[in-house]
Amino acid sequence: MNSNHFRIETDIDYIDSRDRIFRMVFVDSGNATFKIDFSTYDITGPTLVFISENQLLSIQKKSVEFSWRTVCFSNDFFCIKLNRSETFCDAVIFNTTKPPYIPLQDTELKKVDYLITAMNNELEEANDFQEEIIISQLKTLLLYSSKIKLKQFGEVNLSVLSPVVTDFQNLLDTAYERQHTVQFYADELNISPKGLNKAVKKELGRTVSELIKEKLIVEAKRELYTKELSIKEIGYKLGFEDPAYFSRFFRKETSHSPKEYAELL
Image (cartoon, rainbow, N blue to C red; front, side, top):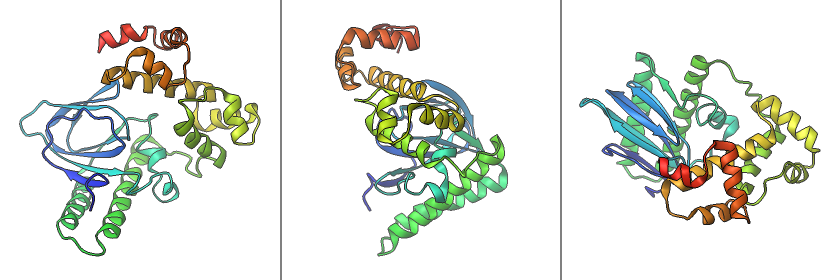
């Protein structure tokens, strides 16, 4: 099986990544500081931590007994959007509106440990059914994690997101670098801007414009963090033809210019 699509990591002390991999970090014991994008969390095991694709992650162990395993998978291996109706995981566990972790009770710890161990054992026994078996086990882990998180943080209307809101989220993920207007998304989804805003606000709690801006700022911050592109190049990548306008936009949303923000990192 291609390890770029699915693997279980057991010996990584530090991650500073931005790739198209989803990660479920199972902290069995001990504690550590997790920095996910630009928020910091003190995590004590047993806990499951969820990191979406392209999120920045760094982990600093704070205790010698810190023990963890990380389930890593790509959309090519298991697409959470296509399987939304089965696992709800993009609406619940890989969701920026709730804490990106769930503390585990003893019975929950045992089941999570069992599922991850089972997947790891399957990886070591290559056979014609390996991928199908692991996908089934991964689905179970994702669904069980969603169940725990819903129990801890309250019910979510999973009937779920309406098709238009789901389609908007998917479109935003692919078009944000070149399309920044509400009108574009409304036109693509064959709905009025007012109708789209009403649906998105009701189900996601923020307007279309707010979500577009949020997406652009998060991506800009990630690019500034990696320092691979100049500020001008970042602006162009995110669809800002005028570097000065990009800087004004960034300052308005963060209270810092891109240069000032980069110097704070």
